[in-house]
Image 1: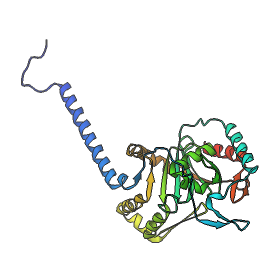
Image 2 (image 1 turned 180 degrees about the horizontal axis):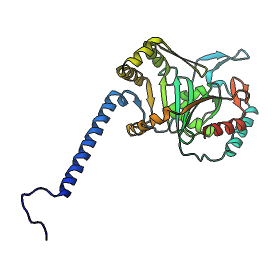
Image 3 (image 1 turned 120 degrees about the horizontal axis):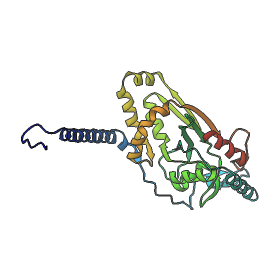
Length: 301
């Protein structure tokens, strides 16, 4: 027989429904509050740039310098002449075609770019790929030297350091993917002079020379960082304005739960070109493409 009581206690189903709704609302409120806090205190302090491709600056002019034969040249004139150019491109294309497909879907790849100021024609003094491999539980930091050969889309063979000036961070991403067969999920761009100035205030000295990064941490920094979380928060809030990236807020928040696992990964480093696998022509470092790409693929994936 159906229960026809009126004004009695609510049924179990109604209590359960109300409880679930309350939990959902409280969770939504908590997450909204957390997002607003993260947005105002951290996420909103960095510079987000929507990925919209790139436009190549074909008329780029740089500061002049005296070439090997005494002639006046610009930075962008450090090029490969025929037949070296044709031979280099042919070998690179052959090496890329011989690469197997990347099967490991558990890697996250972040391109780190450091430029020498906010100028649109700034050199990229630092180009490094951070690969976080969840399958191997290891992290690789691969540094590509500024004088490294790259075949820039719509431009031609140049030193890697000139790529940013030709088309910004997105062209850097496209160039590395096409030339070295790597995957890149997102990029982080740092204004190095501004970043160095900020870190200096916290007793941290950062120096980037020909792609080599030197970081010296003073005693004052160590003491202040271990003293309170406020010091860490203050450092982040000061550093983030020097950073530009192409990651939406949702993407950044999605990465937070993975940070603790990534911090436990063993960090390994390598440098392209590899020590004995390159030649130098007109100031451009040309890797042995077949061996370089093979070794790079083996270490990262």
